[in-house]
Amino acid sequence: MSDPVPPTPPDPDPRPLPPIEPALEDCCGSGCPNCIFDVYQMLLENYKQALAGWEARHPDQAGKPAEQ
Image 1: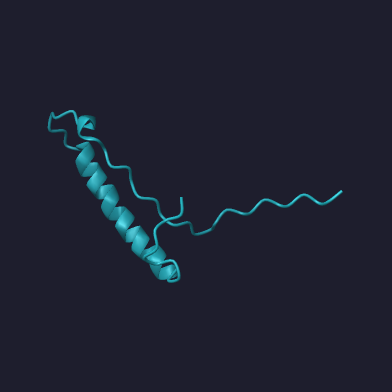
Image 2 (image 1 turned 120 degrees about the vertical axis):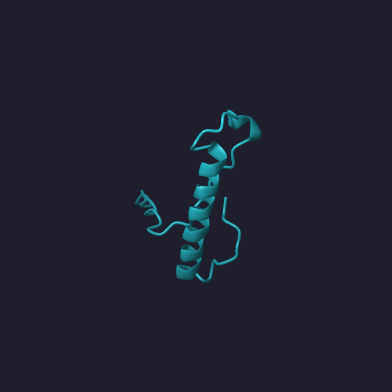
């Protein structure tokens, strides 16, 4: 009987994931102060900054598409 393979530990510094872009019909159109599209733009900017930091820490992976 063989020993079970230990689980792979989670990556301590995973690649950031981009936010999901809302569909046009996700907006209520009432001019909310926190419109879903404004929130998405803020999350996208945060993602870009986080990705730039991650790529600086992982230069071998910089510019490559994320693995699915």
